[in-house]
Image (tube, rainbow, N blue to C red; front, top):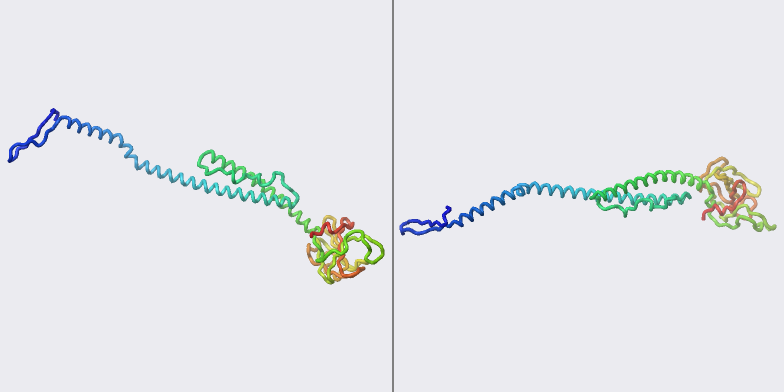
Amino acid sequence: MLERELEIYLRDGKGVRRVFTYRRWMFVSLVAALTVLTAGGLFLWPYVAGQEALRARRFEAVGRLAEQKAAALALRERVRRLAEEAGRIEAFDGKLAVMVDAPRERGGVAAFPAAARLPGAPVDADAGRRLVDFLDVLAGRMAVEEVEQQELARLLGERKLQFLAKPSLWPARGYITSPFGSRSSPFGRGGDFHNGVDIKVPMGSPVYAAGAGRVTEADPMTGYGLRIVVSHDYGLETVYAHLQKIEVRPGQEVKRGQRIGLSGNSGRTTGSHLHYEVRAAGEPVNPRQYMLD
């Protein structure tokens, strides 16, 4: 096999003939090729053997990454909606604070962390920390909001009672023919001081309590005719005079806007109208400063 050259002959019926010529380089080349193939196979074998395991691990890692990204995006969306809702609540609280004359010092919705400043999907440690910081700030602001809402509710309840008690309604549906203050006497004898306002209404028109309170008087009085006096909180009283009919009794509690009688021209009048007064600490004041237009 290691001879430099070897010729192979074959004898048959036609004689002897050469069928192959072997040379030594052929053997060397074959051995070298087999050696290279064997070495390459041994070198690549670990990679080929672990290919399936690598493919499985890669597929699993890609799946976990997709799940984490989806969960992060869902969490970010929930936090964004929470931030927007918190801002809406604070804006509404600001309006309530204005309604009860208790403006807050922190200056409106800017005190809440804005949803626009939320980090992106927290797939890295820095974004995760920013999201945690955002949630901490938001939780703190929500706790403050809860306390302030309770205080606003208390103030609003007090102001609601005050609003209902103050005589802010028009006691009858009409127009003012004689205002509060000095005027010429309607009876033709110089001037006088008018303690209230005269509201022109048809005979028998409903008369309403201008605010919540308690009826203290409901009887005739010289000059006033049939009249009703209602005592309100905060030292206020209202008087409804020249009535045709009284529909309440002394000691009765009345609600704001409750019908208490009918207009007329009883007492000293020049025609059918409602004489309406507001008294503060017993002194007559201009009813127009309380009557909401």
